[in-house]
Image (cartoon, rainbow, N blue to C red):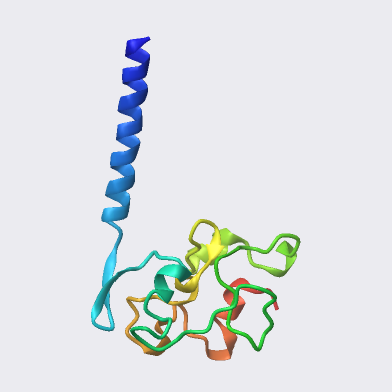
Length: 135
C-alpha cells in the first residue's frame, strides 16, 4: 500500500512540475512597454486594457451582434452553429489560436505583429473574419 501511495504522490508531483514548467515558460513578448504572455485569455488582456493602464477595449460576452465587439471566451464553434463556421483545424492552420477551444483576444490579435491592432491576418475585404465565419 505504501508503494502505491508513494507512486501516486510521485506522479502528482511530476504533473505539478510539468504544469509549472509550461506556465512559467509560456512565450512572452514586449507589448506597449510591458512584457506579456501571448497565450492569455480575455481576463489577462483586460488586466491592462480596462482603462487602468491603457485604452479601454470593449468586449462582448453575451448576445453579441455585428455592430458589437467580437465575442470572447466562448467555445468555437458555437453549439448548434457548426455549419456556419470553418472547422477548428483549418483556422488553426491559418494562424488563429483558440485557448482551451475558445475564441479569445489572441484569436484575432498577434502581439508579435507590430502593426496597428496587431491582427493575426490582415482584415482587408474581411479576410480575418472569413477565416472563421463561412460567408
